[in-house]
Image 1: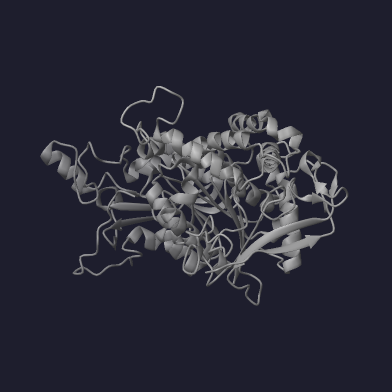
Image 2: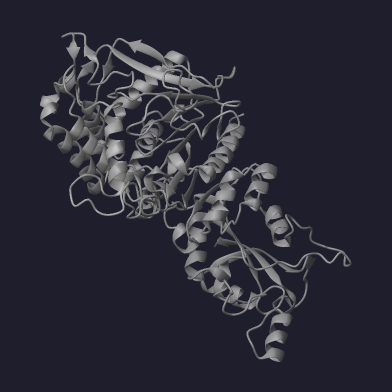
Amino acid sequence: MIVTANTLGFDSLSLDNGATLAPVEVTYESYGELNAARSNAILVLHAFSGDAHAAGISPETGQPGWWDNMIGPGKAFDTNRYFVICSNVLGGCRGTTGPSSVNPATGCPYGMSFPVITVGDMVRLQRMLLDALGIERLLAVTGGSMGGMQALEWAVAYPRRVVSAIPIAATTRHSAQQIAFNEVGRQAIMADPNWNSGNYYGKELPGRGLAVARMVGHITYMSDDSMREKFGRRLRGKEAFGFDFEVDFEVENYLRYRGSQFVGRFDANSYLYITKAMDYFDLTNGQRSLAGALEAVEARFLVISFSSDWLYPSYQSQELVRALRSRNCDVAYVELQSNYGHDSFLVDVAEQASLVRGFLASTFEKLA
Amino acid sequence: MSAQIGKPTGKKKAFVSELLGRSDYAIIGDIVEARTKVLDLGCGEGELLEWLAQTKGVDARGVEISGAKVQRAIARGVSVFQSDIDAGLADYPDHAFDYVILSQTLQETRHPREVLREMLRVGRRGIVAFPNFGHWRVRFSMLTSGGAPRTRLFPYEWYESPNIHFLTVRDFENLAALEGMKVERRYFLAGSRKVRTLPNLMAEVAVYLLSRE
């Protein structure tokens, strides 16, 4: 399945910080067909470093989408039955307006003059996209990690438009630990002299800082078990220690590779803005309690967490489930056993797929 | 769900029909009214809930401790969340459900009295089915073997049994009275036959419909 991305433009987007972004573009992909009743649309929301290319093969890179194992004909998000949409987030660097976009007022990239955005702003832009596509109600909103946070925001911000929500490996708000890891990443970027207060476009990129940020990120996405299994203490291409600071261990090589690869595809300023939006995210948002914030929610929920995910641990999903139950919402929840840590929702999908398939089928049936 | 309900022998005429191979399910299926809201505690793979949703249009929810069973329940489209029963009810508001079902699970809970109270807080009515430890076979087994009883209803070695609170029909009636719970209906079963006399001695399984007076 070859897919192509589309881009839509809007005059302006009002932001939570009071500013207005004008104009604004959003890049998205879609798979499957919208039915006549417009009742089979599913919005898939990507995680921090993902993009609109969720499924199929990109003609540009030849790469499969980040959730190609979940989305497609006969897969959990069955594109023979459902119409699946995925857009790049606001603040991103893969087509949707972000700090690397050109500010029409100056003719230069925004850089740090880009306004600080929130998950609420990302969702508001997605709503504008759906309005433009003529989709009033979503059969499901879903995503893992930051995608799950957006799914929750959708269910709270637009309760009438969301029939069901499937937040996976997500949280209703970042803990101190999650904020801390994001801050380490941001500091690594800002400590790189090439970052130059965000003015590096067309010059040397803050590649060292961004790579270190990504290395830290990758550690948090894996688990002790999965790292032991994948690398152990194996040495990289040598029989004995080098007694220098070149790569000795496989794990060092892996992290360096992942870090440098990331520099080629991700914008350092987007890293700053999007992690900040995640840290600001708090579903209770002014309400006294999480249950209070969920008062208007109409969606039914499938909440999934993973046993070895220490970055978005199960207790965070369980907090959400308890609050939903206290509002007597229709919620299914399970902690899946997996060794792959936070990355489980991307790589260990067999059980997740069967859950999603059954949940979607019953949701679609109830709707009909 | 641990306790095994007797399968019909095929020789005797069954007075109580079976549902999904279980006579207590058949009774529960009779009790539950259409288009109500139902919570099944210890719902296993959600077979009963699926049946109630499809045939009676109920809003069906479940609680189950086993992750593997929760997965299969969700995959068949039933809203089940993974939790133990002792803790799983606390979050619900009062009277969130028309019925709360506890089928063959009471004897497995750590705090059965609390669970019963919570059932009737969260639900307007409770349906409790349990294996009767007072059945003559259980008594006979213990009397003759001198060991913990093993029958077809209690097939486990004592060290493997999930049943941690053994109770009889009489015990349950006493507790219900003590708690001021109203027994709206009671059913006694031996296999798939209805028991009409001496239920504490003759019933293998008892099913109660409870409410608050």
